[in-house]
Length: 251
Ligand SMILES: C[S@@+](CC[C@H](N)C(=O)[O-])C[C@H]1O[C@@H](n2cnc3c(N)ncnc32)[C@H](O)[C@@H]1O
Image (cartoon, rainbow, N blue to C red; front, side):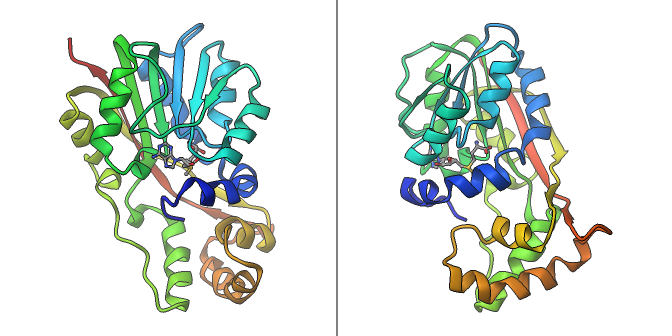
């Protein structure tokens, strides 16, 4: 799904939570480690979605808050982490005061900002002196099995998957953070496999947001394209990767 609007994200909040909310879990550790998140750290999660990272941060003893423009995504996040304040807003106009966060994270979300540099400027504004910005998103399509199946699905409709955005390219996150006046202190590439236990989950997980007739039409295409990723137990493992970077404000 592309960036879409808040309504589109709201419409798929249940599916996101079920199938994708923990996809980026492997990058949480390097982001948390290099940003120095610990007991009592005030962390703002921009584009918090259904709140899985908020819950993880709360479990570490940090003080997480979230912001997301999609009401149903926020509703999931609030149920998941009742102690976290979750506000309506966009990365480009964060509804939080200056210097109120020790760390700002954005996982699989920065790319949806209409103006990435404006979003990074906002993330810097809400950071306390010495704070860190920690961002992560999908690596370039060539590293993702998901890309293979999405290409097959798009081709069935004489369509193509959109080209990789700059943030997905090697060095893309670091360049954007540097252009925003931040100093990159760590960056990496982390495997983020996605698993589906059976054909039904594969289809519902990848075609979420499609109407039932389109889903039925595309299901055989998808199952066929995913055959190389099938496991002995009838499930699927798609190997993917996320790029991530952590930066600090320059004194
Ligand atoms: C792919 S989901 C990722 C959610 C969550 N961060 C995760 O890792 O599961 C993208 C989220 O970004 C939100 N979003 C879209 N445009 C945004 C923007 N301009 N600023 C902040 N969040 C945005 C969507 O509503 C959605 O919840």
